[in-house]
Structures are given as structure tokens and as C-alpha cells.
Image 1 (spheres, rainbow, N blue to C red):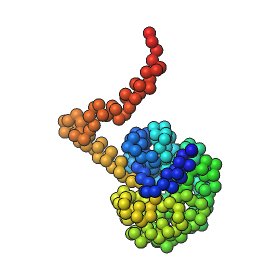
Image 2 (tube, rainbow, N blue to C red):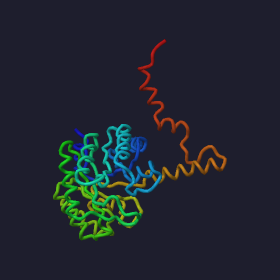
Image 3 (cartoon, rainbow, N blue to C red):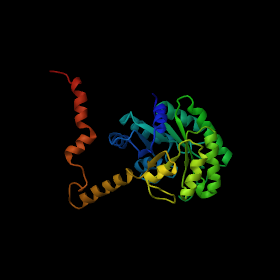
Image 4 (cartoon, one colour):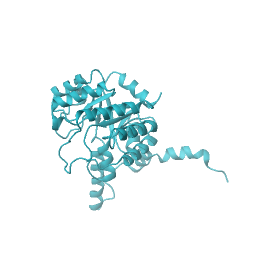
Amino acid sequence: MTPPERMRALLAQPGLVLMPAIWDGLSARLAAEAGFPTAFLSGSCVAGSRLGGPDLDLISFGEMFDSFTMARRAAPQTLLLADGDHGYGNAMNVQRTVAAYGLAGAAAILIEDKITPRALTAAGKPCLPREEARMKIRAAVQAAKESGILILARTDCRPTLGIDEAEARIRIFAEEGADILFLDSPADEAEIHRAVAAAAGKPSFAVLSPGGARATPDQVKAAALGFKIATFPTAMLSPAIGGMMAGLAAMRGGASAAESALPEAQFRETLGYAAYDRQAASFITKT
């Protein structure tokens, strides 16, 4: 089965599908080894790790695709949902983006309706007119036919245009053939119910990490509300940042490692030194 076919089969099973948000080879492999069959290549995580800054449309397609390649090589069996952002341009750019990720082995790709480049402020998410957004999702669905990659259509218009417009966009994105629907920043459970209903039986996606002006139910509640697939953008990255800060503080304090650091044996095992030696053994020449 192809990655998209495996993703469809996973979404057809009962229960909420949980996706760690990853950004590179190590985070992808750790998520796989923890037992997660799928992961979200998060734009915010890639921006944080590569740029050392926030996710404000500064990451390029090339940087995101490079991060996807690292993750795919490190965890080849993981079903990766790629963050395609706004498709990096118009409908034709969207088609190129979707095709590239599909041919590279992504199981699904997210395409959103934000305007890019955004205004020079971190506040707000201005979005395209509804029909222009519809055409970008139509372009994405057409481009997906070659590889079968699933299209996750996201609307960010709730904070600026209101829930009525957001609900309408979810409905038309589903009509255009999007496979998974995503209302960003729902204010409460009532808005979540509206978005799930507008998806017309197709899977609904949720962000469940706390933070921001959005409803963030726990996993049990999210499933009860009708969500089928969910990600946690800060669940791995935030502790990783905390660990690095702890290591730096330990060095400044005269210690060689933070109390939270892995023991040396576990550190080497986690990075795969022993696995490398086992794989390399058959290639060592005898003298």
C-alpha cells in the first residue's frame, strides 16, 4: 500500500488519530519509536528549529521540503502529513507543491487559505476571498490525483471573518474534494460542532496543544466532539527547547550536564550507535 492508501486505512479505523508534530530526522524517528504511525511535519516547528524564530510565513518551500526529506529518511514507515502552508503562491504554485510532496512519499498535505505574504505584523491572519480559496483547494485536489496524496484543507478566516464564513469555507472545501477539513481557531465547542457538521462526514483535524485564542479540548473530549485526527505542535518542541536551556544553564553553573540529560548509554542507544555497528558489520573487510 502507498502512504496515502495507508493513511486512508488508518483514518477509517475507530478512534482519534494522534500526530506528534515533528521537524527533522531525530524528532521523526523518536515519534516512530514511541509507537506513533503518523506525524505532522509542522511549519511552526520547522521555523523554530531552522530559523530560531516564529512561524510567520518566512519558511520557504525548499526549507520545508528539505525537512520533509530528513524526516522521511529517518522514519520511512511513518505516514507524514506535510505542512504545505499556503502552497507558496497561486493555484499553480499549489499544484506544484502538492505534486512534489506526493511524489516524495507524503501521505497527506495541508493547504490553507491565508494571504501571503502577510502584513508586517504577527497579529491576525488575513485570508483570501472565498472563491480564490476554493480555486486553490480545487487545484490541490486535481494535483493530488497522480500520487493519491490526501488533501487537508484549512481555513484560517475565523478570527477575521467570523464563524459563518469559516463554516461556509469548510463546506465548499469538502465539496471540492478535500479529504480532511480543518477549522483553525474555533472559539468554543459550538463552533467545533458547526465545523465538523460542515465537513459532511469527512475527517476533521484539530490542534490540541494549548496556547492561542482557540478551544483546545483534551483527547477524550476531542474525539467526542467529532474530531478524527489531531496534532500537538508544542508537545515535542517545547520540552526540547526546555532541555537545551537546561543544558546551557548547567554549563554556566559549572556542571557538565543538566539533571534532565540522558545517561550516556541511553543517549548513544537513542542515536543508534549500536544499530550502526550491527548494520556495518557485514561490510568490514578482513585483513
